[in-house]
View 1 (cartoon, helix red, strand yellow):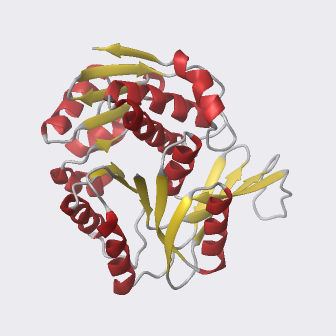
View 2 (tube, one colour):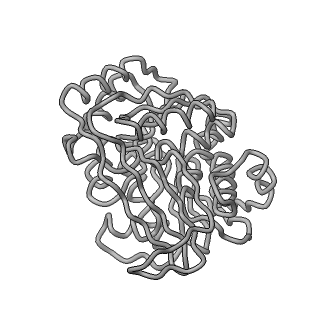
Length: 303
């Protein structure tokens, strides 16, 4: 089972307008509501790819109920814990430029943290746990470290989809998989990364620290996988980018679904790149048919 933990889920309210004018009334040409949060996105794509997954984390108020209802509609197993307050609403305004306004999260007390840790007592060495997204202000800042330690007690694999100082401080726990872009990788070492060779060099340093699979996205140049069996370059399919939300989460989901099927990181990379590309070329998260239509266009080269 692949569990995803989203501490601060959201309703993503996507508004499209022909043109946006500040200080006056603007009429939307199209609106959509989605259950949001990086871990939730990963689980939604995993389900579409046929993988067993369950959403963990917190939900609050009427907005939390909406998030749970939409996941159930998508047939995603969900065990979000009820807490005080309201789950946030993130507004994504699409006009000439894309603007985002992220709302505030729920109130998570000490009891809420204990209940989440209790849920992880069911983990086994066959499970994968994805820790992704932001941490609500009411949650202890060391919550990811606490969750990782609980996962390690049960020998479950840990995936980290976060960045900055949080990611840097957690590398000591030797996660199974991380996926920084080349800017985020450079930030970990305080250097700019401007070439494929530099990305491989610093991904190797991360791998040496015990991280089993390091995927570095290189924008238009594709992605690099540094793993125990070697270093691989993946070139993504060409297409019209429609959606900047969720492509990275889809890559994580595709990689994990592919790894569960093949137990080979390079094959997992192929499905991950196809999934991320399919989402980028869609209005919402990718569908299975779109992923497999692109998968043969993903070029993998061992370096």
